[in-house]
Image (cartoon, rainbow, N blue to C red; front, side):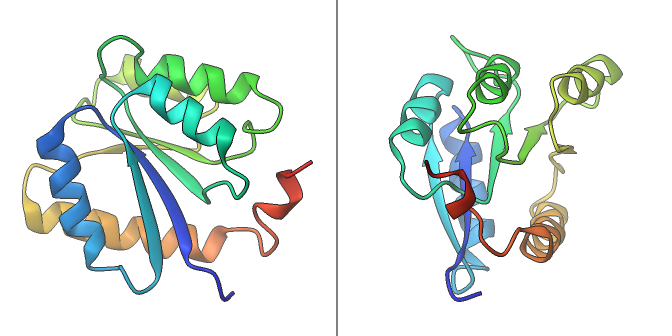
Length: 143
């Protein structure tokens, strides 16, 4: 595939966004990362895009509109529902994980506390999703 792997990261915490951007920068030659700081911003961005991301990484705990609410809105939108969504959280509470999967999240990733461990998580994440993406994605969704 010639085009870069495209990730949309949605997180309201500036420090977490900066950390994620630093970690994802390790993969800058093979991926494009966009960020949004809120659920409403993410939904507006996705609805306006012609080429959809390969995967959305979505923070669970955000003010105003939680990650769960964003996930519900994505799955209710005919054009956006097929985008894989990875819930990203510091919470490993079974109720949060169960809710994410009940709402059809593709996976749930608990953020590691150390930079090195988070770097390893992102390496595994990028490797898995680059291998798993559909060859004609996102063209099949554009109508």
